[in-house]
Amino acid sequence: MTSSTLVSPLLAAVLVGGTGPVAFAQAGPEPALARPPIEVSVECESSPERVTVTNNIRKPIKLKSVGSTYEKRAGEPYKVKKTLKPGKSVSYTFGTGKGRGKRLTGSFVFDNDSPKEGVVVKTNKGNVKVRCFEGTNALPEPQPEEAVEIPAEPVSAGEPLDALGLLAALPVAPEVEEGYERELFEHWVDADGDGCDTRQEVLIAESLTPVTVGAGCAIEGGSWFSAADGDTLTNPASVDINHVVPLKEAWASGAHAWTPEERRAFANDLTDERTLQAVSSGANRQQGEHDPASWLPADLEAACQFVADWVAIKASWGIAVDQAERGAIELTLQNCGERMVTVVPVYYTHLRAQET
Image (cartoon, rainbow, N blue to C red; front, top):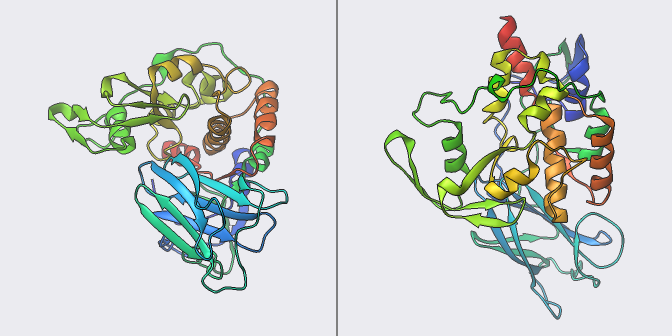
């Protein structure tokens, strides 16, 4: 799926129930952003000081430590021992003051008078240094061209939006469970005809180590991190591919009105890595068909990421939340600090494909 138009996720969320012309920029194919594999930003003059790390590669990375680069303080570098999944971010803070992120020390660590000052983040993929005056190792976002009015249509991505704000934009409706059967969501399929079905594609994409692909796309070797319970798995047969928003939940939240083709697309969605995730069989059984009102991962960080992914997936596919579900997500996110998500409104593309 491709698109040449970018709009904010809030606008994308509003499009779930709206039609008609919308004003936003259109400038042909979007320019490719030069995103570093491990993106680091540092706020040396904020209170508290803050370092944010984003994983821009397709495999998890392991963060080892975070510290300053000039006249290190006692205790530096601070050990973090964090596994960061693809597309995810984590923030760490130093000093006093309120703000998102895990506090590593109550003391400020950056010397803002020195041009040599900055942060060094050590990972299993190497070390990343960013000086305070640089702010980040990522290139600036391209500036949008002059906005023109065009009809509202599917878009492929959006700017980061706070998950709480996106939750507020989701439609609220009671669930419709009548008529659900798992067979109504055909899976696993080989959508691109390369000999590997959806399950095998996810196993290959999410393995922490190289896998061997044999005849019939049989997977050998590999290592998978199950975020819900913290397990690391090394046997492909012991890995489940979890629909983060379960199929029955999707049906009850709006997919009952979809065509078979749309349900098939949801059940095998490889356009958004949040939709399908490799987990342990135990974690998959624990979640089952539950929504966040009745099940969350025990670890707070895992729970925060789970509900943020949940909101983004529901917004992307234009499906609703019920009152209890919305309340549980809101309560969880209030304990998570700021959680930024983007929307990939694949739902509209599938609808348009059916109309043409």
